[in-house]
Structures are given as C-alpha cells and as structure tokens.
Amino acid sequence: MTKETDFYQVYEVFSRRGNKAPMQHQFSLLAPNQEMAMIMAQENFMRREDVVDVWVVKQSDIRKMNSEERQVWTKRLDNKEYRTTKGYGYLRQKWKEKEQGMLDEKEIMSWKEVKRK
Image 1 (cartoon, helix red, strand yellow):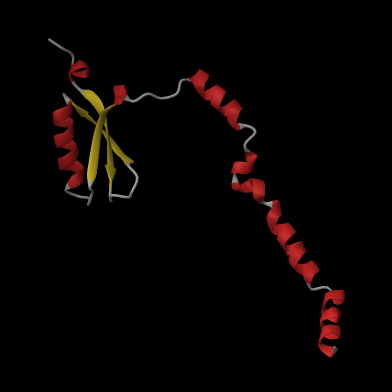
Image 2 (spheres, one colour):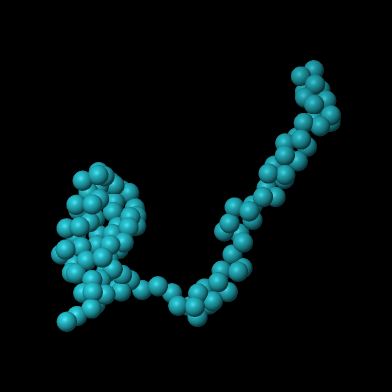
C-alpha cells in the first residue's frame, strides 16, 4: 500500500487575467496527477475569476536558486545602485538648485535691459 504523501503531489497554479497581463501565482494544491490538478484549478479558481489562461505546474518541476547561486547573484548585484530609485535621490536637490539659480537678481535685471532696447 502506498503512502498518502506519495500519492499526492504539490502543484502550483498560475493565471493571466488578460492577453497582455503577466502570469501570476495564485495558489498551491495537492492532486494525484496533472489532469486532476487542472480540473481542481479550474473548479476552484476559474469560476470565481475572469481569466484567459491558467497554468498548472508540478512544484518539483520548478527550479529555484540554491544558496550558492543566490550568493553569486547578490555579489553581482551589489554594484548596481544606479538601478534603484534611491540612487537618483540627489537629482531632486540638483533640480531645485538649478531652478532657483535661474531666477536670481542678475537674470531678472537682464530682462529689463533687453526690453528697453
């Protein structure tokens, strides 16, 4: 007799609400096979939500990074501050200084002289 844990497998359910929308993870479910997992996903999800596509994937088929790979990637990403919005925080101050510098007294007085000519 097989164990119950050997009989059921974990499946991940993804869906897309529109043709241009990204796939989003919705939930996990236990099913004996892929066909039953699809039926369960349709019954539990598609009748409640308007979706154009559903993917059912066995969790064991999804590959994730191991700890060594994660360490390598975090080292590679350490020098990428320019990609985050906090890396551009100084620009607001620079823009404010630029705007204030444009309307100084000399600038305004130069406009007056141009009009007299």
